[in-house]
Length: 604
Image 1 (cartoon, rainbow, N blue to C red):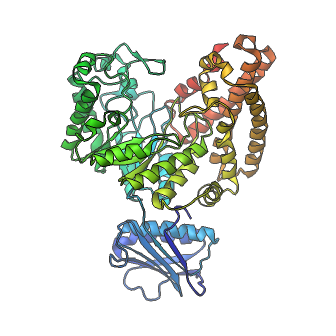
Image 2 (tube, rainbow, N blue to C red):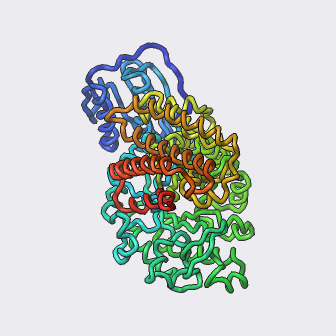
Image 3 (cartoon, rainbow, N blue to C red):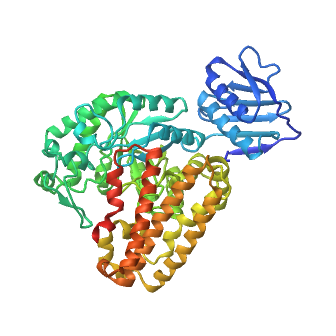
């Protein structure tokens, strides 16, 4: 089962699940009992719920802090003629029913006598979805995601926002992106609460505000109103707020004042990551005088005071402050630092040790590695999660937050992220478990995809990045070649003849995988299958582009017939991409995403 339960003991005897009967539940657990009733009905069983007596009932839901003392823990006993769910809280009962659903699936609707005792290693098990890189899901898509997360026993969800909330006075910023509305947040918050998930507001409040600062009305707030150059040499427009502009804090305060009342969460993530331009513009003199770390910390503390006025706990990304270890100890003791890093060998051990030694609470934040890849970097993602969970547990992390970013137009469909989502849920609940990829695939096929051998195909596609001699941080070489073709042409010699042969073999392998996927396709799973096939087709385009570039050297030298065939197939795949996008996501942002995806077609 996923997550793997802590203690499973097989009991003597046999158990026969009757066709009908009673579920005993006190009134305070009625919603959990209804969920159990629906699950039994899906197996053709007819059960009713009673509260006056457990006599004669097949199922009983009990709250007992003496038998289960962990607030999220539970105890399931299948024995004799009864199934008992015991927990200290309704949340624990909810998780017991999730486990029971998987027991039924594993035995195709039957049960055997068993005792399961379970509780999580990490109190806080969070997932974050990027909704600011063009792709904003429809409400039904978000609800399906919440259902998935709740079965996997996640208990927090963040939607990463830069400009995708419909702030009343700022329509110019969000009008082309189909943002979440006030009422939608309220509805989603309620939907999450019913499934014991805390919907945590996430609004970047320092850097990553280019969608705001590009407009004249907001440019006066920018650190670099005329733009700057990223450390890796790429020009950018205005990016971060300037801490020297007094109105910056007033602006952030007004956003949070409008946003936060729509969330029942006790927390808020203010972002404050990757402030690359700090000290390069309006704050240059101040940073030279006080030090860039001090200027950053002072603004972060100003954000903290705003958050405290709302009675919330502030979360923030820890990537900047960790560079100034002498300042980490000055952080308030009631903040939560979010320590992120997305490579398998990220130095989580030293980072966790730093924040733990300063008495600052933190989460570890690995990633799905789905972004900048088309089909994922699966082994990197699994190794990254293992590293984060291991060191988070070692140094007393409050929780983990698995991040799923959407850099460069968010072209990957959600199915690409599922295996890392399942893996993180499993290790975050039971960090001692050894879950090889073969077992992860089998469990995910049974409980999530409900398609036999589907995950095996994901593993093949998700590890193709490893075959090239060029390995990039936070991206696959295939993705970067297609999405940034001019830069790729400048570095054409980085790929050798062995890489060319590898690509030819990989193209044949992708063809084979896609044929096998189409054989598995049916109406209930097509959104998963079609999404993966579409992303696999994008990977093929990237490979074919690399082969053309290696053969002809320049784009204008590519044979006309070859180029026309390539662009025709490219256009077809983009049309399929658009259709799949609109099935699950809002229309806003689609044209921007397609523009990024098709840069290559504009070069000739």
